[in-house]
Amino acid sequence: MRANPTDQSTRTVSFEQLTELLRRIFVAHGTSAEVADVLAENCASAQRDGSHSHGIFRIPGYLSSLASGWVDGKAVPLVEDVGAAFVRADAGGGFAQPALKAARALLIDKARSAGIAILAIRNSHHFAALWPDVEPFAEQGLVALSMVNSMTCVVPHGARQPLFGTNPIAFAAPRAGGAPIVFDLATSAIAHGDVQIAAREGRLLPAGMGVDCAGQPTEDPRAILEDGALLPFGGHKGSALSMMVELLAAGLTGGNFSFEFDWSKHPGAQTPWTGQLLIVIDPDKGSGQSFAQRSEELVRQLHGAGQERLPGDRRYSERARSMAHGISIALADLERLQALAGH
Ligand code: NDP
Ligand code: PYC
Image (cartoon, rainbow, N blue to C red; front, side, top):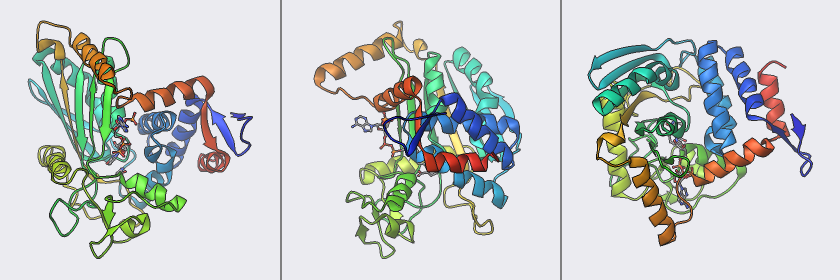
């Protein structure tokens, strides 16, 4: 780990160094080595790509959830082959990503043979960015769509009280001339993690993100976090998408709806106990043409129409910078991580 010459209060670490540090933290706080490998790579990838609401910022939440006994860091997922194009995984009260890892090869085999395959994960905790779950499929020429529900903190459009989670949707598609096209967005106006970061930094939010405990619009992130709530993005449209996420990620999989679990007997619990759906498609079955060539043509037209920045582009450029120059981390944060790893 080397000092950044331009700023004495930060250090740069390589992706591999950060992954190893996080892996040691997870193991030291009660996960199995297998689960630690998956979570550490996921969290380090988010930090590397500038997905700051789901990078190292999340480590205290992971650890307090583990310490509370709310999530099983040693759970072994159970994968079931339930149809020509359908796989189920019971995460056993553990994290969703190890369940995805366990089901992945079967899911890809089915998507390639049937043209499409579904993975329904239940009894799972997802506390991360969603793009790491879909992007690798597109790197293998497949289209992937995923959604996960979280914890009640979003007021449905026209409702008086919160019911939905922040419920992200992520999509990845291969492209002939570059890295996959990927988007990953919360269906709330802002991710809960970004509200927490704004509160910590003492910043106000833009208008239209949330309401206070009286249901009145507020730009104060603390008022949203303390008995207030978030709003869906795009009014009734985002609200409809959030409802779809509840139906597919929880209703269809057998996971909890965002309003269905009660973590009050586990002080410190932060990881939502819900479900996740993945749909994987072999796009070349759709027509006689190469899908990756078709998506490249769409990108060309988007650029021609003036859209320079596609979803995913910011992450990819952060990733390139991190891989070339290291991941910059505040010294205080790095020291906290090292202490958690037991250095
Ligand atoms: P953002 O609003 O920051 O970004 C959403 C998407 O839009 C990204 O793909 C982003 O690309 C793209 N984008 C942003 N700005 C532009 C622009 N100007 N032009 C074109 N594309 C743009 O994300 P959210 O705040 O909605 O979500 C943040 C993270 O929180 C996500 O990773 C999500 O999965 C995670 N989350 C996880 C939850 C869970 O339960 N596990 C719950 C809710 C959220 P780029 O990435 O390149 O910036
Ligand atoms: O940022 O909304 C969020 C979130 C919820 C669960 C994990 N991240």
